[in-house]
Image (tube, rainbow, N blue to C red; front, side, top):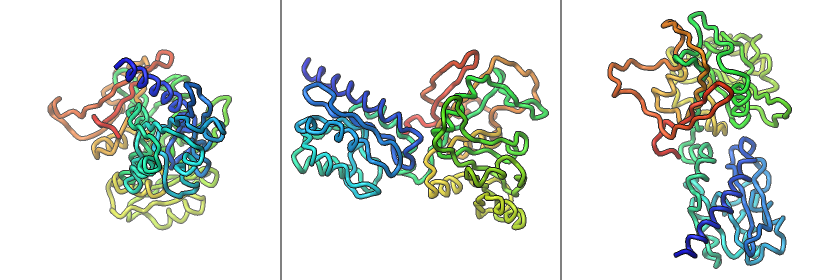
Length: 377
């Protein structure tokens, strides 16, 4: 029994190392998952690797290259089941066989319903020992955007907002700069850098004229997220920061079916891409938009407001997670803009629940993070 416990602890320790490696590729591998791999021979790490960018070698390939001849009869720890299909790169299962690996320890199965289990079954069929489910929860948490996109065709949606202690995101005049401190804002830019898309409503776009890009001090951001605006009647100005930079960083504007064709032509001439939704008038249908974004390989979406947009995602049950920043300020004005504007509820028992709450401080700001799903992907 002690030997089994020791073996399990050893497996989890090496899988933790694979997870740390996988996290390095977060935000750079989409629409592929972030994956890490470690090769261990005689309780010694002889090879490490992680998936660095979509279309590039997978984590197993890097780890096996580094291990070289030491991979023979070794154990390969990998956070995601090795692929057994030809994509932009050859199947990793063949590389594992050719390297002479004796055992493969897997964190989580491939969630793609078309290939799930194929890699493990292939390796077992060729005489390798395959042990799955090692730190599976942690591995799944790292790749929730990939899992949701692979199983639903939609991006993983995270809401982000900053508010005063009494829950206001802006004054009655719309002033919101700056509620949170510089440390919090820097973290938001890091969130942006790991997201495929950033979404705001037209109200926020008109009031703030934002850039919605990721800007991190002292670091070059390799890939900027696609900027998305919910704008049913195409009110986004052609001279706005978003439209003016659309040729450098993609901008998508989702509008209603009856939006002005002339406004569409003007924005498209500036480089803005228009997504014309089928409905006429009223708000954009969130599930239909998410399916469209999923087709465009957007697997992770950071929704930054405003209050009505956050409410729309929550009420439609399309939000998966949140990061809410609270600053040490009290507005004390009942006409200030609330964090979320959703449907009326007369009973506290009708309130929506959040799960897996985590707390983090940025100076005097407090960030609450959590999930809207009791059992996340």
